[in-house]
Length: 119
Length: 235
Image 1 (cartoon, rainbow over the protein chains, first blue to last red):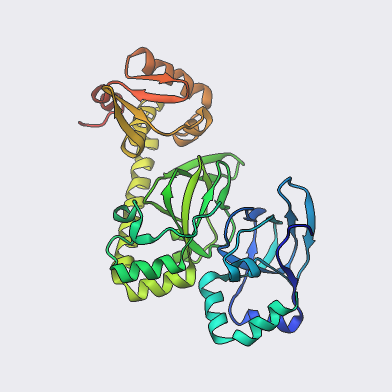
Image 2 (cartoon, rainbow over the protein chains, first blue to last red):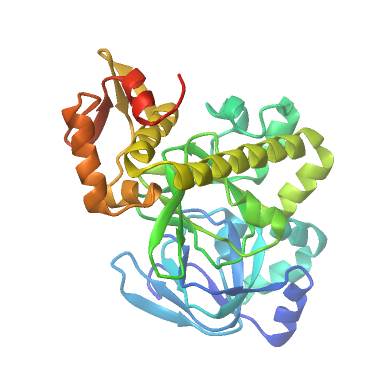
């Protein structure tokens, strides 16, 4: 995944950890949840369905499966996305907003460092 | 594109937005928690049917709010301009978005996530008051639109639409009022609940009557008083 920042596959335990901070939501309509060049509103943990990652030329470079966390690295580092992400209709995600992420980092700094070290 | 270093205290839209009453320290806190991005023309902020997780404040540009009906047709229900917020109704009603928000032109948007807004509303009552005030204003506009649809003919609705656009996007230029917004005929037709062909016919009538003129895609209002008559609005 050339030019991609971090798209991480979470273990079941890690998904459970994040489920303490966010509920699951269903995307009834396909949508662009990430635009290349923008900075993140939120990170997304895909629990069901599919998210397609495309590069600047709209080529699909990765298909995210349930358990993937998208955008956490960019949110943590306040970095621009280098890709777009499109979620399919019927997919379910846990959404971690900026405020929630800052809260997690304050209360569980070791857990977050461990998560990012997986890279 | 993003706008990482913009401070809320320096925002040109500060006095038009819901955060206008906040102190400098509160605005600094706001700046820490906002995410500013630029949306290109055609990019969506959110889609009808999807879950809300924050509120968007328009800093510059224009966002159209559209709904797709059961017949699959898309209609513009509102236009959001600098100082307006979008997405707040679904956020507070805990429902999926009832409409789609799309940038009509390059638009700068500040986003505040749901948990932060909930915290802010509890700590700063003026924010809650301003949001309620906005909701009241939006409801009034929706009721007015409903009345227009039921009581006015297409010509009157078109004239009224031009006057509404003049309020939000009008600029006096050489004795005319320039509408600083480019909408397609289809978009304007959807806003007044008619077909494009019908809109074009009445548009031509307004031009022939000397009420409006066009230069490329830009519309100029020439006679506001007469347009008010056509819209059946008391001046």
